Length: 263
Image (tube, rainbow, N blue to C red; front, side, top):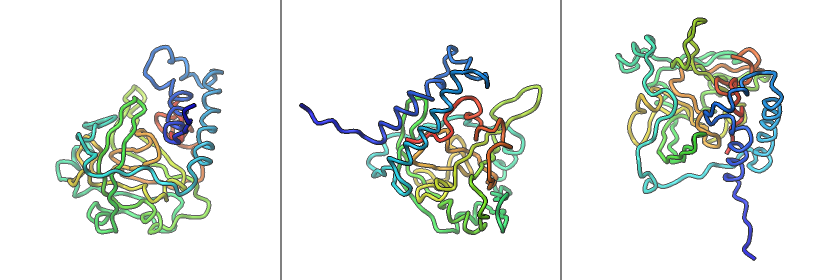
C-alpha cells in the first residue's frame, strides 16, 4: 500500500479554497453569500476560525514558507487586483516618482512614523524568493526585497493593547453613489512580526512595478495573495477590527472571503 503523506501547504490551501473559498470563485451562484444574515454564510464564517486555528496548530508561530532559487523564476510576476490606479492622488505621486509618498504608521503606537521610500530602503533589508498563491488558482514565483515589518513596528513602539495591523491603500477598489472605497486589509501582530513578512519595494532585482503595487506592498508569505495589499500608504495598529469597513478585517473579507487566508 502506498504511503500517504499530508502536505501542510496543500492541506491548508484546499481547506481555505474548498470551504470558505468556494464563495470566492466569482460564480453568480454564490451571490447570496453577500447577505450578512444568510445561514450558509454564517457557517462559512465559522469555518474561517477553524482555518486560522488549523494553520496555527500545523504551522506554528515561526515556521517559514518555502523559499526558492533564482532558477525557479520562470516568468514575470503576474499582477493581481488593481494594476493601474487611476486615483488622482496616486497619479500625482507616480508622476513625481513617489518622491512625496510617505508610509504613515499610526494608531496604537508610542511613536507615530512618516517614512519616505528612501528611509525604508535605508533600513536593513530582506530578500526572499517565494511563491505567490492566488485564490483564483494560479501561482507565481518571484524575488521580493523590502524591510521586515517587525523592524518598522519596533521603530514605532507598538502599544501592548494592539492586536492587528490594518493596511490602508491608495487604489480605489469600488466606486458608487456613496463614494469611493479604497482597498484595505489586516493581519494579526503574530504574522506582522513573522520574519518573512516584509514591506516590499523591490521585485526581481528592480524597483517594484506599478502593476505589482509600487511604491510599497505587503508580502505575507504564509497567506493567499489577497492578504498582501498593494499601494500601501498607511499602517494603523488597532485592538479590534470592528471599526474597519463591515468589521470582517478587509475589503474581500467583508464580501465573504476568509480573514486569515492561510496556506
